[in-house]
Length: 428
Ligand code: ACO
Image 1 (tube, rainbow, N blue to C red):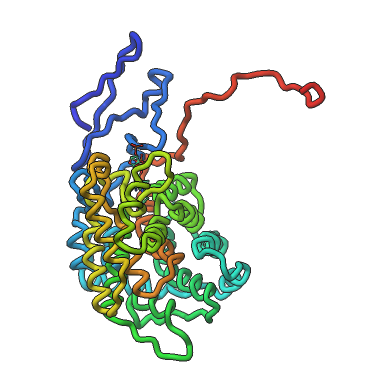
Image 2 (cartoon, protein in one colour; image 1 turned 30 degrees about the vertical axis):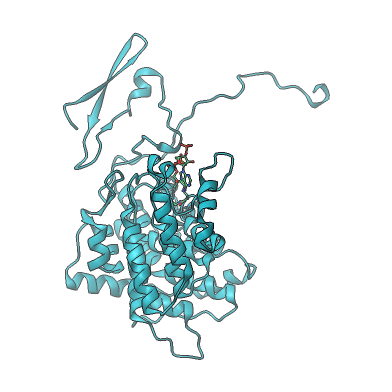
């Protein structure tokens, strides 16, 4: 709380609203008592000016292009850390000691297997089902396996559920891929790293020894770090809202996966690569830029623009560097990278994009890397979901352990008909 107040003049009524400061970032006007005091709600579709909760996990300064997890910059974390370490940091608030990190990684590795009964769920899907549809179904189904053993009021049980979710997500994701290509499921090998294990479960086959390529393992681990958490984005808010009713955590994460799937959110990486492939050659770029600027054309530059970043998304900078490393390591010469670079340059010099502060976001380059590694486009958002699971569970835990936590229940501006008498069908 600060000494500042915001004064709202409503007709002849004057209301003082407390102003609350965080450790960094904009102050917030506390409107919790506004309705009781004035009989008015605030109106903010899309939550463009609304802080929905208090959080200590992630800080974004969209104007400066800053992203911090528990105070550590995304640039440093993606350069120096590992996905397991970042997961520990998000869940526990501090970087682990060597022993704590080893123990955490070991614990996660002990939960990688799925109940064998879950494999039968996959067989119920069409082979051409989108893997995100499978993810929604299978992760939601986990709630049936761990319902009675998950008392969300008990921090220990919450911790176990969190570890299970982080550990099982790669297995579930790899199985979704295997099912779509008609190959047998590969069981986890806990000698491998979190990311190496996922690569083997995805690309390994029983007939051959799978060798993890260190450059690919490192690049994918970095991509997981870049996607681990992003404060109160749409899918995280979905998880919090679902969880606020006390729902089963596996069901809440399934809700987050459903939200992430949309092309305006996690689905953008798939859409961005499809767009780059459609553009195909640099000479077609101006045509697509014109289309993106045309108000009468629904086309948008996918992987461009962000609700919060009005500057370069710091994750896109790391991603662009990683593309080069992966393409070099795998000796892949993908002309799409050249198209992406030129598209970025042209857009960043175009008055429309400058004026609207539209910059590449995390999804602009990630598809090129994932495609070079061998993932089909339909798996891109699945990888995002895998990595974001740690953010979702950390945010869910934070919410449940907050004593001020209430069920999320927004209000509305009603513009429908007022009360009117029912007319029987014979008289309509
Ligand atoms: N291409 C062309 N114009 C765009 C783009 C784009 N990618 N993004 C925004 N604009 C324009 C809009 O047309 C709008 O113009 P107007 O003011 O003349 O009406 C203005 O910029 C503001 O756009 P909004 O949609 O109002 O901004 P909002 O914050 O609601 O949307 C969003 C952000 C959804 C990310 C948007 O920029 C977009 O659709 N981008 C493409 C999809 C994408 O890359 N999504 C990934 C986001 S990152 C993530 O989820 C991991």
